[in-house]
Image (cartoon, rainbow, N blue to C red; front, side, top):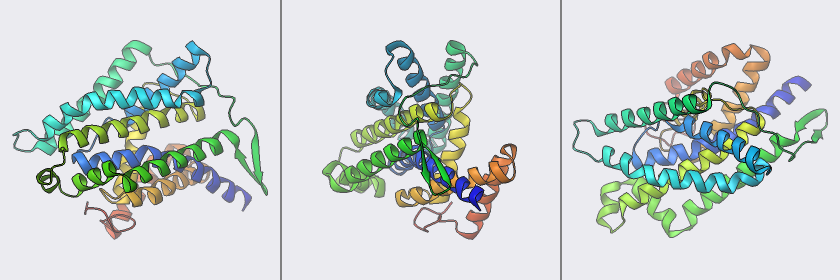
Length: 292
């Protein structure tokens, strides 16, 4: 029983970071109507940025999170007009073209990283959360607890921005109906750029945390891309609230699979569960998303 509770606790802690990756991904899908294949590469690049800034500046990676947010926010804002142009173009299937475009971006990010930085895995060391917290007989690694708490704070701030500000209202209006929002005077292109910038900033920042908890290499992006797809699809496409439940569920499922079945079967189990869940509830866990 202790092992089971320990495994679930570890899954919840890492699930909070999966929520941090997927929530911006879900919002970008809702506003831009684009499934971004580059989500895992943003995480990977965030990990490398944290590693090299830590190496060069000697600053603890946790204090570099605002830098990562700013750097990837600017990168996302500059890239967003290209995605918007492809998505709004006069192609026969603009959504499919945008999907291919983001897939190309992911290949460029991955290939460039492999060429410039090689295959070697980098590990980021942090002094934050080195101690272990005990909850009865359950040991909670301090680093994961701190990362989980930080991720929750960021997610809470993001949701407050989304539901309590005028810009957040504009974002939700565009996500609900782009044409109607445009007719009401909302600059859809600008809102789309801001959303993609926020998504890239959040994802890159979580990448720094992932590099501190695990490690980072040029091949790790595909893992986070697949997990982001899992969370967003299980939550229901376009459902922000469902992401919270689906991300925690993914963390627990991954931890249980690794401990009781074996890490090599994680993907098989995760996507087998996803398939069964979609057969039962095509609209996602909370039945609020678009039908898959």
